[in-house]
Image (tube, rainbow, N blue to C red; front, side):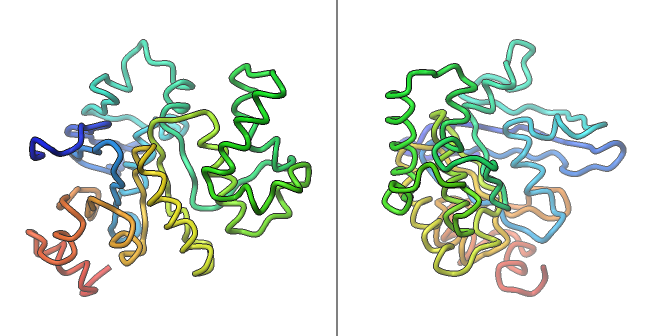
Length: 258
């Protein structure tokens, strides 16, 4: 995939990635570059491999038995499957926000502080600073600053999802992976998540899976269309939606199938 000289550097890149669950091929020969400080959206019908690809970027698929892959994925030019790679550190650098918000049954403060404590941060003042910074970054601070000791489970769905984004941000990742982060939310909460994604790309490299094509068009700089485990086409979002090169892409974005 070629970029113009003034285009951003490549933060992560998959080359000829094939991943199998046992004998089932989930994605086949996918090569995709994810540029730094941009939002890359992955679209396609259910079961097309887009979430499998996303989870490959921080080796979440390692947790599924009988999973094996061929091909490479690199982060800053280094293979994430190198034997010297610490998977815990990889998942700190490449954070993940899931489709369904999954706050811990702890206070709002402790949800955000959790990863910091696991990482060895014990200084209370520093924890407080980092928690506030993360909640501000997730556009949640003003809504929760007076109830940080309350259970996170008492927040609304949209607030819980932003809390999960704050939790991911607290350990200062370089890449944020988002797997349909707004699919369970109402339109107002969805709009807040989309606004947040737009702001966050100044700091993070973002890859997002969405089944909502309008959302992909609104939030992403580049869009990749997956179909039946293959990457059909990737390009600037406007081009993918208005002038795609592949007929399968055109049929999908115009609603002829999917």
